[in-house]
Image 1 (cartoon, rainbow, N blue to C red):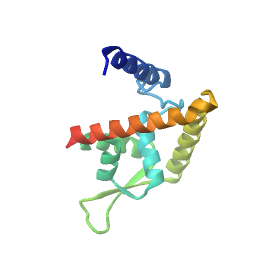
Image 2 (image 1 turned 120 degrees about the horizontal axis):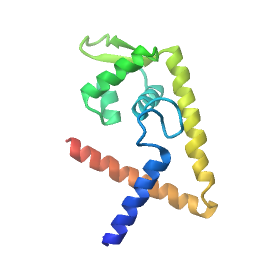
Image 3 (image 1 turned 120 degrees about the vertical axis):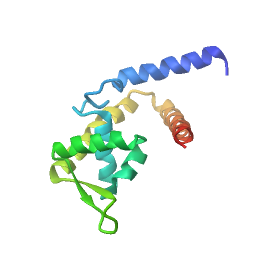
Image 4 (image 1 turned 60 degrees about the vertical axis):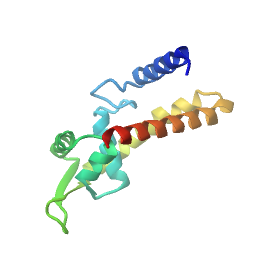
Length: 150
């Protein structure tokens, strides 16, 4: 790959990170007033609950201690509850509370509005190309993440 191409890619990616506010610890890219990790955790639980805490750590690609703090914070807000698995008391299961379900739905709605709206600003004949490029990038990032965590 040509050096200029690598630099252009890096600058474009960092511009996206800044533009979406991914570097801000206090809000999601859609402006929801929680950290991105908290939002990702709530959406993951919305898709599959109850969920073992260990599985949440894997999905978020975070270490156990970081997820323990995250879960404690979400539990403190009243958004999730922890229970022991009926089959193995060593396994902590997570589920959303009614308030947490409402918050996760609001997070998804805000994400759909903000991020879905970005696609509306892309020329219709370029949208499929952008979506495909994002999917390829996501696959590469996921593969690299799995390789470094193994």
